[in-house]
Length: 448
Ligand code: ADP
Image (cartoon, rainbow, N blue to C red; front, top):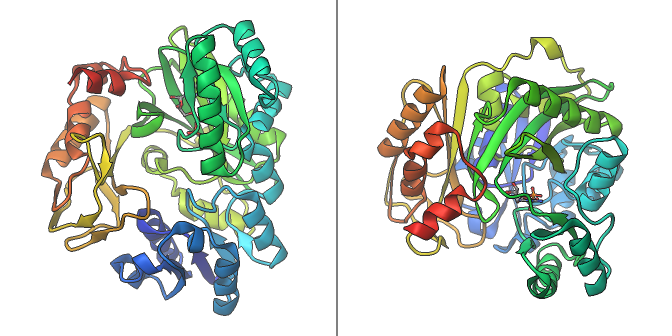
C-alpha cells in the first residue's frame, strides 16, 4: 500500500479522497490554486502545495507544476478525482514516465476511450448496441447531411472529446443541422481544443442508465450495478439514484453484461463508468465510457457497501480486488442531489460569494459530501457544485421522503443554490412514479 498520495483536485472530491486516505492511514499532499489557498478542507491534508494562479489552466490543469510538486513532496501516486486532469491520457502518461502511479486506468485505455468515436468503434466491434450515427468524425457539411439523411432527424451533434454536456446540439432539419454543426465545432474547439464532432440519432423519451465498473491489474473486472441519471438539465445530471426505477431485472442484467464486456475488451483497470441510453421500448444504447470516478459514485457506495475511492487506491497499489460478482449485492435505494451555487430563478447564474449561514442535514440515512461551511467563499473560477446530498433507505418511497426532509433542513445563506429546484423535483409526483425522461426537467422549467 502507498504511504503518501497526492490529491490533484479541489473542493468536495478532494475532501472525499483525503478522507479515504486518512482512513487508510495514507498521508496526503493536496494541491491548490491561489483562489483556494485558504480553503479549510486543505487543513485535513498533511501537506498542501499551491500549484498556480486562480485560473484552472495555470493550476489544476498545469501538468508541469503538479508533477514538480509531486517530485518535491515525494509522493507515490496521484488521485485525479473527476474533471480537471482525470481523463487526460497525456497526464497519466507523464505520471507513468515519472514513476508515479496514476490512480485510474492506464494511459492507453484513457486515450482510447476518451475519444468517443473510438469508444463507439470498440462497442460496435464487441456487438454492443450503439445509437445509430456516423462511423467517424464529421468531415464537412455534406458528410453531416448524408449521415442525418441516412439515420433520419432528429439528430444530435456531439464533440468527440466531449464531456459535461458541452459541444452538443440537437438538429431537427437540414437548416438547423448546418447551423448547429458550426456552433458545435466552435464549442468543442473552445472547450476541448479539438473541433471534431460526430452525429448520433437523437433518441427521444430516453433514460440515462450507467454501470459502475471496477477492475484490478490481474484481469478481474466487476460491475457494481447501475445508476439512473435521467434527471438532467442541459445534458448535465442533477439527481442520481440506484437502482434505476425504470428498467426490468432482465434489462439490468443485459446492460451490466454489456458494460463488463466493453471493460474486458480494453483490459480496463480501476474505476470506470459505462453509460447507456434506454428508450421507452427498453432498447439500450452505449454512449460513452467515463474513465474515472463519477460525481455520483456515492449512490453506488450506499447500495453496495463498497467504498469506491478506497478500492481505487487499493487497485492502483497493486492489490487484487477481493470481490466476487455474485456476492456484490445491491440493497436498498440511494438518491443523490447535486447542490450547485447557482440561481435557478435567474437562468442558473453562478453564485460566487460568501456563505453567511450554513447548516447541514443529518439523521438516519443521510450523507453530505461537501467542503462548504459557514464563511466559505465560493470562487468564481471553478464549477458550481458545492455539495452532494445523499440518502440511503430500504425503499424508494422512504428514500424520497428522507431526501425531502433532508433538503428542507439544509440551510445555505448568502448565496442562492439549487436546493429549491431539487426539492421541487424530488417532490414531483412524476419523479415518484419513476416515469421520467432526460428532458423532464427542461419541460418543467419551461412551464414555470
Ligand atoms: P457528456 O460526455 O458531454 O456528458 P454524454 O454522451 O454522456 O455527454 O451524454 C450526456 C447526455 O446527453 C445523456 O445523458 C443524454 O441525456 C444526452 N444524450 C447524449 N446522446 C444522446 C442521444 N443520442 N440521444 C438523446 N440524448 C442524448
